[in-house]
Length: 448
Image 1: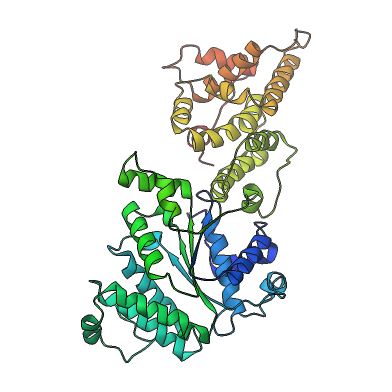
Image 2 (image 1 turned 90 degrees about the vertical axis):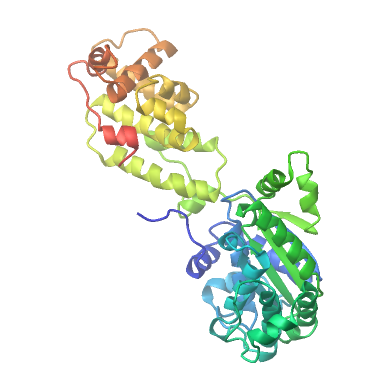
């Protein structure tokens, strides 16, 4: 087994930008233009729901900024995957040094600053990331000043070797000294490689509330220097709830958070289904896809939601279309019951358990009757059954008849002779001259 979510590796970012898979390349260009035209100190909030691609977006911005800066070793300006997006930035001068910090990955630390500076040390020490020595020394000075007041014995090793832990511990005992070093870095050293430093702080809404608040307070205070821009990435609604739990229900969390950023940017929604399915749009012609598409039309999915649904829906579709379902009840079950079960398992696990345990044999009908494709499938099946039994001259279908058929179908799938006395009668009504059988692992566990 492997994780279903796409990880924002450099290869994945490059492929996403090249194909404009999320449709956000214009947003990346606009955001970089905004950063290039913004004077520090300044702070921005990139706001979107959980799983809606915030990390992909800010890491894509960071990747392009690195490629645009010739003083950074790594992704080349001439990378063909970035040609389109870099060409859109030809009319402006972009000179930015980016740094990305995943707050959620580091909220195990007691002190947010310790985690931030340790990650900064690792990043700027990596393979001599910066070609200019002066800015490396300036960054090293800031990092060592920050780490010296913590209880974690971490020091920059490769960035600058002249500093010793003994002298640092005695020299840097206050955050005022850190701020002074940051100001010096922003106003002198950083200008050797860029005209501003942009610090991306991602996944803030997933951190421990106390860690998130302290990180906001400390970074906003310490990095309030010329030529430095802070970019926070979070679901502001979830972040406000977390902070509210920390300070109490009467605390005005939304207003409290507003003081930490100067501007909020709400991300453009993405066609999450198309993103997760390699650009493929909905619009299938078979019974399974028509029903699944109609359910999806009524849902608002994040990219993460779409990835997780994709796996189950694809497995269910393959079972439905490629399996040996010769009996009519098996055909209607796999193209009507299975797609609904995939969505029910995702949205209402208690209902899913009630259905698959046989405790509620009418739940599938009650859930599905709101969808036109579901009703068409059921009515077409009843019509075929009537034809097989030479009874197709009966009156028009009724809701009661459709409900009774789905009750019998669910009885055949989930019922037992011990728990449901009418079990065999339901199977007989479904089959006419035969009784259908169903793979219990598929219909009870979605194990394809």
